[in-house]
Structure formats: C-alpha cells, structure tokens
Amino acid sequence: MVLRLPLPAKDDPVWTSANGFVVRKSGGVVRLTGHETFTIKVTGEETDGAFAFMDGLVEPGHGNVPHIHSKEDEAFYVLSGEFEFINGAERITAGPEDFVYIPKGTRHAFKNLGQEPARLLVFYTPAGPESFFLAHGDVDRAPEPWPDEKFNELVDILGAHNMVLLPGGDDWD
Image (cartoon, rainbow, N blue to C red; front, side, top):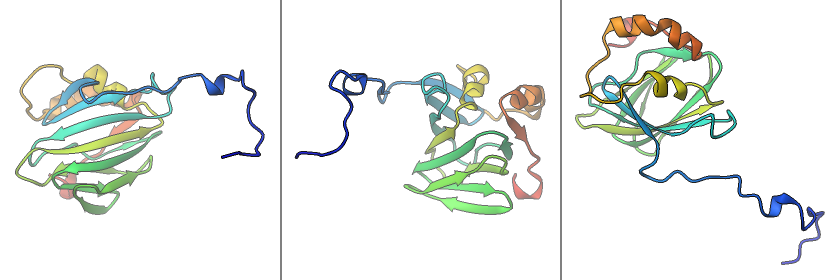
C-alpha cells in the first residue's frame, strides 16, 4: 500500500518510541476491602493520570456502599456473575459482558447478586481512586465486611481521594 499522506520524518521518534506497556495476567497489586478483592492493574502514575484499571472479585451478596466520585468517571465491565448497580435513583442488573458507565457526581454502588464470587473490571478516568485502594486496602486477611467504624475513620481520607460516601437508606442494604 502506498499512502499519499504527510508523514513524520524517518528520524521522528514516533517510529521508534515504545511508550506503551503490558500488564500480564499475574501483574498488579492486590488489596482487600471487606468482601471485595481488587487487583490494581494500572495506576495513574503509569498513565500520566489519564486512567486507572482494576480487576475485582466480589463475594456473594456483597459489594460497595453508595458513593460518588467528584472528579472521576467510573466504568464497569462484568466478567462473571450478576451484579446490581445503583445509578442515581435507578437500579441496573448487569451480567457477563455488560458494561456500566457512571459519570462523576453520580450516586452509585454495586452488589454481587449470585451465590458464587463474581468478577468485574473497574476503570477510572482520570485516574485517582485506585490510590485509595493501594494506600488503605487490606493486604492480608480473610475477607470480612468493613464495619461502620472503619468507614467513619476513612471519611476524610476518602474525601482526599474525591470520594463521598452516601447513606444506603432504603435503597441498599
């Protein structure tokens, strides 16, 4: 094929600079948050703040608490199981190969509806919230729910990561 387009000069780094990277299946840093196990695969430090990516395994009947991100959009891709998502006042049920997008400032949460652990991928743009998991997720223990006291201790820390916890009320147990 012969392209008749203006092309960069042969000595332009666009031809040789390898600025991308790969994260292998076993790569990443594992953190536990109650009944959730997240592998932080890509951080903002690695993407110049553009995005972050995590792989989550959620125990049956569990998930996170309703919250908002004030500066980041969050997206989920369900790999296995069935999840219920809160999206503002709406509830969404999502299963394998479903994609859920939550823009910043939107109240949201998720819960595994199944009887087996379920897996989802989590994306943040721009990056930021993954740093909370790295700094405050548990490194080593059997999964158990984080008690209200732990969340109360983390309120200011969550705020520094642009996250605000919201009460579940009648919407979420």
